[in-house]
Length: 484
Image (cartoon, rainbow, N blue to C red; front, side, top):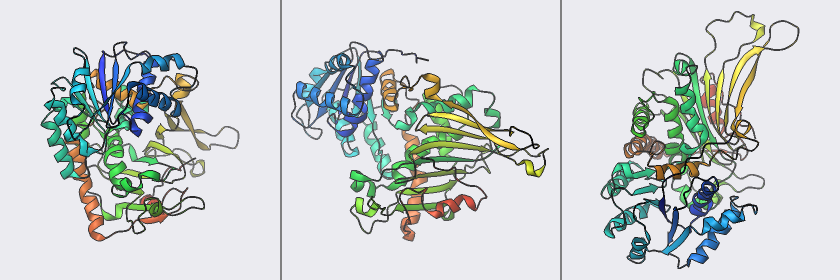
């Protein structure tokens, strides 16, 4: 089943940090795939901007190599590569100074969408915004894309919001979280609000608990210096997992409109109960037989930064009171896996004998790998010998439905960049959302810092520290297995 491709309006997209890892690994390969899909109009143009002195030819060569390195170009689409690279230009620019800005102003065309991707560190957000306006480059119709991290705490997030607000309206600011661009995340809303089957059951009366897991098999690697100042709480929970929690728990918006959706997500964040110390587990991976420890990779032998975190969260509202949400994320774990598991309650009364067994329904929404959903339902085990209940999955793997390899499903960055050009903010975070998330997160971090808590060590290739298993066992529940 081929996906329907709707071309966007002509645009000039400027990528600040155009020679950086994110631009080469995600942004430009994503744009190339949209070009190959026919979504990028002939008048579209991409301008890379960075400090390095480089000609258009040199920059195009750099991007051509990136397309090949990161799997967008495969040797069979060389004609597309050549045509795509002709749309790309490069301007050397000093984000903190004056050089390059006049050239950028001259290069931008009139009567097309102007979007500016800040693929740089947060310290440059303000200077870039200021210079775009000083030089008359941005106007009231321009859009800026802001990459995470958006702040380190509530104070810094407020400061960033205030800085950007000096130059851009909220409707012009696109705070990107690539998790929201995943097909399965958006299908979560479709499943909930487009099917009468689920929404009547989507509450504390019928759902026992919800698990949200984002597990990685890699360590911090070359990000050790950054990660040691951040940790799993700031790097993953405050943004990615928080957004997944909000989309799972929010009330139905009045319509599928950017502000209506984000209003409901904000209500969820404001309804979160503070996390008790006993409902939180932090971990840090130790050395494996062939892998270094977190402390070695971070080059900080005394580090108390968590590479793993698990917590039990309660939402204080009518829909969810009494139904806990369990979140966990970590590095060097047994499997690379991102999923949301909705565990329904067992039937209030069983008509079968005790030895028949009993199983609760379970909806699993897989974000990676193999995006899709499956629903575990209870049936009779085939064969003689009486009534025996077993669980079987009703499986919907997107690759199976959409084609042999799922190649028609856009990558998260592809979708989100095109949404910027369309002017659709539904899948982007609003400023008050970010601040509310930090307002909930900060006291948790301050709590373990004031107590001097140290993370529990766990072996690489496991499901995290034993204490995380006990977090659910004490409630009579268990985590879903991490299957490689």
